[in-house]
Length: 354
Ligand SMILES: Nc1ncnc2c1ncn2[C@@H]1O[C@H](COP(=O)(O)OP(=O)(O)OP(=O)(O)O)[C@@H](O)[C@H]1O
Ligand SMILES: [Mg+2]
Image (cartoon, rainbow, N blue to C red; front, side, top):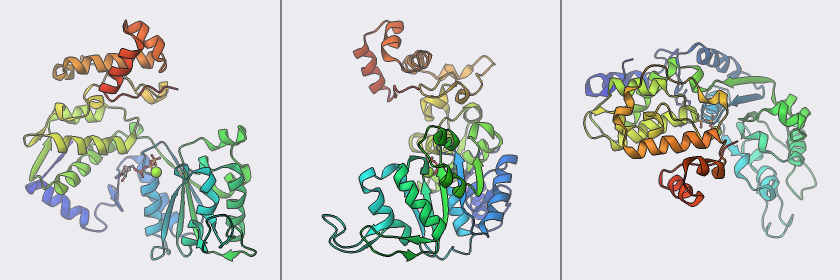
């Protein structure tokens, strides 16, 4: 894995990335990936971008759903139009409909003027409904109506307005399971799921890790004007071995962290976030399947550990063992719950387990 940046090699990498059409298998409109699964995603994106079909993006957090949505927009005939990204999970339920559909003056207290909603703002472009699985069921009915009739009715308005938009929706949730639980409407699901694109978790496309790491190293080194920076072989091995519950976002943040704290021209294990530098660490939250394989070989990376690293890892392992149950974990660790809480805070750990 040749992960490097800097004047000599980084300069070339920079020119390459700026050159449109360079190695489309590896860097595709700012999306990096060479694994068979990502190549399949690239091919699918190119094909559907030309159409007006509704697209459903499925994938764990940090797998690149928003990146792909933007890429589809930019490659579509709507690229000159707006790209309106709406994070449904971030809008309070009480504001959801006025945000999405807009309102007319007097529709409710405080509606002092007419206002277009986000759906209308996407007219002529692409509406990205992120975390669609979090949409209240009553709003789902209205969104379905908009999708079916290409029209939107502002709150308090008598008539509807025609809109011309393409919808891309995304979720990390299992929508069929949400339907079964009565939280998601089946008719909306079928309307959204015309083309489904699955973004695989990073741990299932290990070939991409080195590529992404060097891409991010180049980006952050350039941003910080660091002239020359490489990963040590141990760092490369650690990065490739980690299971990335936070997917590409976690890798990106890890590289940013390393670039921020490094001292010499080489990034060493101590520059990595502890979760990655400690490959035996189990995430405190997450299922069995998310944990990835345990490393088999005797592990020299522990040589870099501080006592605090060992303590942190042990706490996380015991918490995972007890599925996040602090009382049980504290008992096994032989400390009080208060001490456990303090240590969790100290180490920046989250307790929540599922
Ligand atoms: N293949 C990739 N190449 C380059 N950067 C990527 C890639 N995939 C993801 N990223 C970067 O990782 C970060 C997370 O991606 P993004 O926001 O698209 O994920 P997401 O699936 O929408 O996550 P969430 O569900 O948490 O919103 C972004 O900074 C994005 O640019
Ligand atoms: Mg997102």
